[in-house]
Image (cartoon, rainbow, N blue to C red; front, side, top):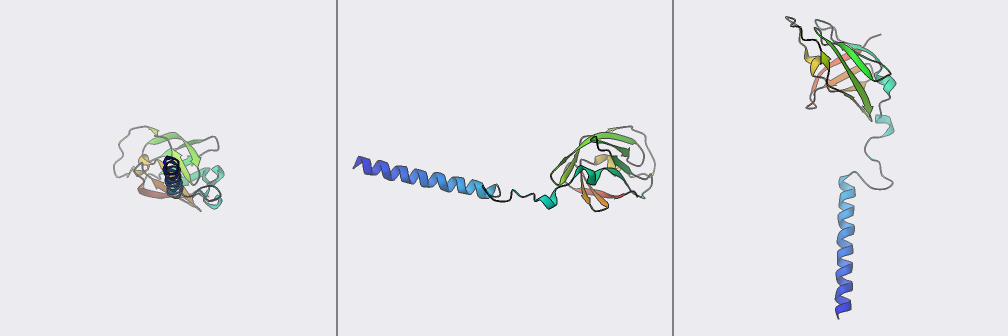
Length: 140
């Protein structure tokens, strides 16, 4: 009798563990043989972001990305410099070192950039809260 109860308890515990693992795999977007979420078509190559991106706004906000992982430019008033890295479909930018001049009538929104996403010849700019704060166009 003890042996049967132990076997039944073991089967029950194993079934529960399998169900728990299956639930975790579903929450993480799948298990072996499933897509992890970021498809190859969503990946951003560093070459996609390298170049100069600008706006026609007052002060001409501009970001220039080089192939060594550096980004520089202007928020329309102050010079800004930092580094960036490409992770999947995201381009993450470290906090900027910047000058601190006051420029009347210039919206320095670009100073808040922490991530950008490339969409053709448009660069969507996001702050550290994930909110889109503006766009820049690829300079030809």
